[in-house]
Length: 101
Picture 1 (cartoon, rainbow, N blue to C red):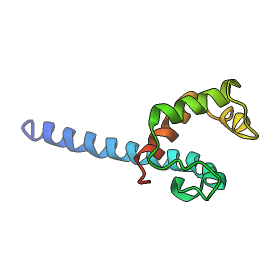
Picture 2 (picture 1 turned 90 degrees about the vertical axis):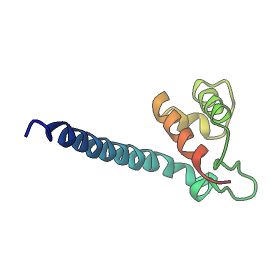
Picture 3 (picture 1 turned 180 degrees about the horizontal axis):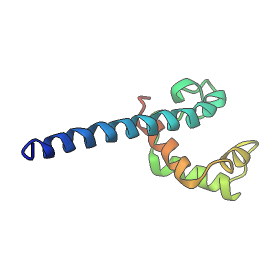
Picture 4 (picture 1 turned 180 degrees about the vertical axis):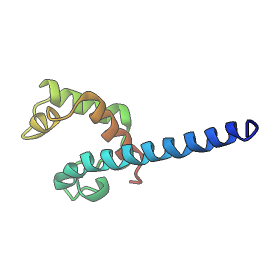
């Protein structure tokens, strides 16, 4: 029994970690879903809007933080960005950066 305990513990830890990771991804996708209204499904924007898929993380996060703090003027993004924590914005940026252009 003692010999198998580390294996059982490692398996359980891997399972719990993957469940938590899946929950994080699902939560991030639900946060990012509101972006689809203007930036298109999966960040594939229609003409006239900025695509988000495959964007540079640093640039996207800077823009969002500038919207949030009022440094960058906008018609609606300054209001939307205030509805997210800095960590949620980072998570959304990370999500969109992984998508293909």
